[in-house]
Length: 199
Image 1 (tube, rainbow, N blue to C red):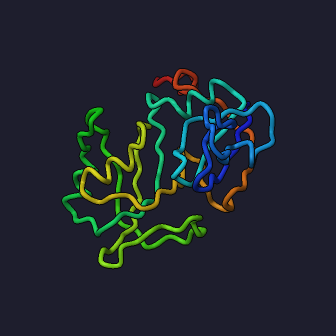
Image 2: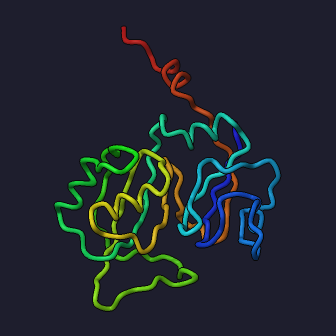
Image 3: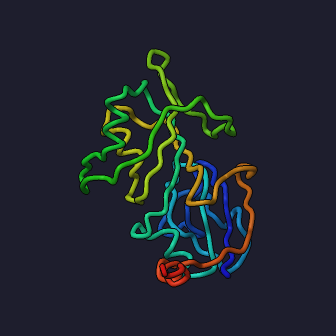
């Protein structure tokens, strides 16, 4: 068993415990919120993004969560500038070519405005330009991938909230709070070995 922390990261918080190399005013880090020793982030979430971060005290679990080869789905609620048409959504579903190559197909659909916490600072809107919310699920973890995908199809991202990673999500978790739990470490090899052989 591994210990896991689910953390609802606020906007502006770095996804690490120290702010090395910053000579200016100190920036908020995980250490401002999480005091449990021995935990390390399993993957990153950009400073200007919000939502679910997972931390664990187990190296194998960390790899299972963060390594793209395991194709763990990650769902984001994103607010974009403009109202994406079907062609834009279909392009995301098929995969788009970014500077670092073709993305895997994404699951994406329009959603009603979700009931979320207020962001600090608030999102800046242009009164003359409408906005829209999407649910976008990917199985990769490239640098700023969701923002780059949205921009590629012509709809820049105004706000990004990671809602879930695999079976874990933010349900019932307030902004800046975390919950700790235990989780089984199931690797692909172990899962395969546990399957019954056909007779």
